[in-house]
Length: 248
Image (cartoon, rainbow, N blue to C red; front, side, top):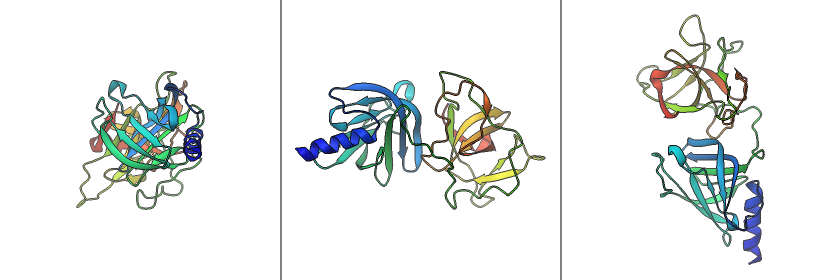
């Protein structure tokens, strides 16, 4: 019994909230990542339940959410989510998970929930080797990605992933320093399946921000003033032809 109580308290502390004696909804931030793709990353409602269990997100408006049912006796949890089609019920199993700092995760999925203001921030994330080449030394973005301008909505409200690249051809999508070809230069390269946050748009070009899966790029919260994106993630312009929009 003592072990069960201790595990429940540990889970609550890592999620940034006190132990709930009854169901309670608080504001915070959530992350849902399944098979290397991030479906939810930013502000969300969190339903706290006795024993350390919780629900990340609420699924309203066709959004994603997940439930994590903690077993205090084993220190593991069973997680479910509402699937790629953002259904109204969390019927798709994510399997058994173990606690990983402020998250619960296994080899194929991760569910995180943080009370507002408690999410750890990444100072200078970089893409893993092989996911994209490094920016060429001395090159910088010529047309900044402008984000924000609302107190109600996230700084960037769109998301998608790269598709349609021919592996028999170049096999990569150039990230440009501005919305077009010449005179703009190539800053980076993306590949099929790479995820991006869509923050700006000019004609057929998207201004995007991106980093390793699960990275907090500081775009999933309101920025009242419109301003140029300066990090911590990478940013540039890509052609919308090769982006499948999943959010926004």
